[in-house]
Amino acid sequence: MSEHSQFRLLGAKRFGPFFATQTLGAFNDNVFKNALIILVTFGIAGLSPEDINIYVNLAGGLFILPFFLFSATAGQIAEKYEKAALIRAIKLLEIIIMLTAVFGLISANIHVLLGVLFLMGAQSALFGPVKYSILPQHLREDELVGGNALVEAATFLAILLGTMLGGWLMAQHGGAQWISATVVGVAVLGYLTSRRIPQAAATAPDLRINWNPLTETWRNFSFMRGNRTVFLSVLGISWFWLYGAVFLSQLPAYTKTILGGDETVVTLLLTVFSLGIGIGSLLCERLSGHKVEIGLVPLGSLGLTFFGIDLYLAQPAASTAVGLSAGAFLSSAANHRVLWDLLLTGIFGGLYIVPLYALIQTRSEASHRSRIIAGNNILNALFMVTAAIMAIVLLQAGLSIPQLLLTTALMNAAVAVFIYSLVPEFLMRFLVWALINTLYRIRKTGLDNIPDEGPCVVVCNHVSFVDALILGGNIRRPVRFVMYYKIFRIPVLNFIFRTARAIPIAGAREDEALMNKAFDEIDAALANGDVVGIFPEGGLTLDGEIQTFRPGIERIIARRPVPVIPMALRGLWGSLFSRRDTYLGRSRLPRRFWSKIEIVAEAPIAAEMVSAADLERRVRALRGEMA
Image (cartoon, rainbow, N blue to C red; front, side):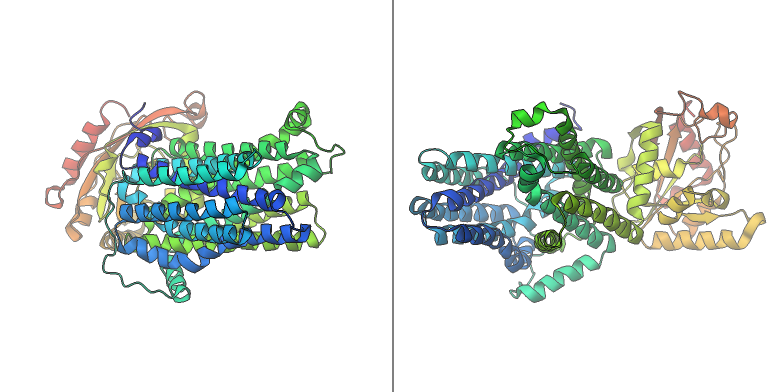
């Protein structure tokens, strides 16, 4: 297995036991929930259809309610105490809850079972902040996307398998006993796996817990609003759960009234959608290049909208068939489009959700991360309740189920435009990601020499018009590039450069005021702890050779002494955006697509050792013979 594969994490003690623990928990929740719904619907004598409807809807509400009541407190507890010990305590609580469930199942006592469901929701609310905040403590940043992808993929598959097994076991003779043995056994297994989770130190051990859920929830939202990108990422995640809740809640009725299928078709559609989420989640790690790539989020939202619309177009009218089995449903080629739409909706949903979770984990302060995740869980629950209310209102207003799904897909497009207009970084990163993954195959060496925090300057040779995009799309920290003002003003690219807060500069003879302003902005950026990127040649190479480095770098370092990292780009000379050949010559195949290029970085140079001549020598050595 490749050393960069996300699946190698499954064998690592710092991830494998946690992964198994959380997957078993998600599986167990859904075994019990579906068993309870079937027991209420078919297994408890004396319940009228009205009673069944009340209890089924009450069950959904009782599981969601604890997220509003306990998430804020759970976030504080996750900050104050060591997380591995907390997980073990939560898993012990699960065993106690499941033992209580045994009594309710054997006696068919609906009130006990509903109480158990409430306690399960409370346990999930306690586990949520620990679940996502422990990952950044055990995984490196280049492993976070892969770790989150595995967690999301496994969670959706566990939900699917748990739901299917819960229903199947309850349908057997002595179903209550089978369910009882399963939920207790899985809870015990989850506790045993949790004992192998390594310690994760408390991030705020001196925190004083505020037990008031209302005021603490407001504080959590305040933490989120303090970082606009994080706050909008939380809103994006919550919107995804609203979107998914609408689709999944309508799937049984959609299957019956529109597709003419029976319960086996419902299971088939759920399976396809869940597999899509899993595939999309796992693809994130490969497509992102082992880093938190928020450029995948707009791609995901585009897919959610496009295939949501196509699902409406696939079956615009009610089917004349009734009670089709999964086999009969699959035998009709017309139905395959529905399956593809659900699969691709799931795939793009995975591409959408995983980077958002990873972004929250990396951009939240460690001392506030659990509380921000708790706030995220509260908003997720609120949006899911909103999804139920929205569906009821729109269906009562006369919309058909396909029209409701279409409306939700169109709303997704509107939400995406709103979020990306507020934080253009998402769209900018998408454009950069699309550019560098369409035109180039990139090999990276030494990028870990760029420090994870603190100010520094990266210097690089200048070969093409898209050098800044290629470097910015591969360096894990945001980089403020200094670039020639005429390149800064290139249409389309200008949007990306402005969004990335690039600094335009001109020569003293062209515009001395602009030059001085640029040096002031560079100094302010370094004082703020940013990474600044410069191309000391002062312009694109005309012949593929590195030009003489200008002394501007010495002026920058004299004013603000910070480390300097030499870098080199290889293989871009002759590409579409370099100045070799004519435009037609540059754009001919195979140079245009999938060109092999390299980015190479050296260890940082101390400020007192920096000179333009020495940096030029180092960059030449890094570049070698490959321009």
